[in-house]
Amino acid sequence: MIIQFTVGNFRSFHERQTINFRPTGLVSENKEVDKCNILSTKDGPLLKILGVYGANASGKSNLIKALAFFKEFIANSLTFENFLSSEYNPFKLSQSLLDNSEYFQIILLIKGKKYRYGFSIDDKAHIQSEWLFGPADKNETFYFTRKGSKIEVNDERFKEGTQLPYSRLRADALFLTFCSSYDGNISGRIKDYLTEQVIIENTSARSLFYSSTFSRSRTNRLLKTGNKDIVLRWLAEAGLNFNDIELRELASSNTRLRNYILLTKNIYNESGEIVDKVTMDLDADESEGTKKFYNYIGDLSELFSRGGLYVSDEIDNNFHPSLLLKLIKLFQNKSVNSAGAQLLFTSHDVNLMDPEIMRRDQFYFTEKTVTDSTKLFSLADLKGIRNNADFARQYLAGYYGALPKLGTFLEEESI
Image (cartoon, rainbow, N blue to C red; front, top):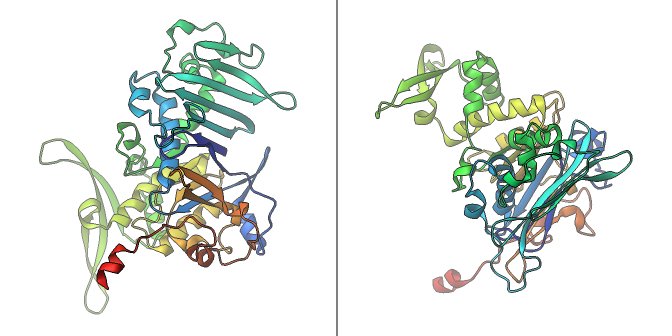
């Protein structure tokens, strides 16, 4: 489970900003809201869901891209030698470099053990520093630290990091990934969690390394393994009722094999009686919202059974508000989300900003500062906001900031 993620000097982020799944001490007026949104863990309570709101170009998507970069760099730093140089993208709008390095850190809980891992990147696209802290007898202790090419390893806590061919570690590759490639137990566990159990939907990302994060492969796999009833049941939960579903591999116009998702629907006469059936192609005949929900099914059914984090940028895109609320409630439902999977999303849909749905500390906002850098803050950070307030109305009224500053040119032209 994810406890905290911090990013600094990356894209629109200048100073370090943190998003935190650790709940505050506030208590909702409706106790059921707390009950369905908070997970109990060995390390204390954690929130299941965080939503990020703010104006366009305020940095919401950059938060998602920071987490995507963090995940993909851990996965690919040994495989692609030019990964870091091609993806290096520091904040460019300030003469004052707080620290001439990109900074990323995550705190996560794996099988009841808390780890704090991070790294910084210098302006030559090399690893400036890297660190891993983990559980000790009482408090956390360092497992390894790295400054440039110098690596210090805790022989007692991180034996897998000793007696390795350090000379083979490139300046633009991560020591954590390096250790995992030699079958390191702890490093492998952290790498696998971040690369396999953190799933990022990001249809707008241009990078080759992000594109694989949005896929229907897991849903297709359910059909291939004879689990179409699971897919049909999920679709029915979203109000998308089909009689049957089939995955068929056929040659497309360029002779390459392509997966077709074929859905069976009823045909009715004027009296509403079923007279026949028809087969529809998911991509050719169904809406973007239906396709998006189909893509979610495999990812979410897997996360709900094994745990992890699902990340969605503009989760409300192509979704009716009722369907989006249904999706949120699936994460909140302990009988469905039995492994306590978490959700991080960005949105403009204020229908979710309801104290009967989520807590005040589950809403974050992005706002541009006078230097055009992104500031990230929680609704729980603001004073004088009641736990049962009309969050949506107050947000739209500008009580929380994080609103666009709109010009008047078009209005003046029309006068």
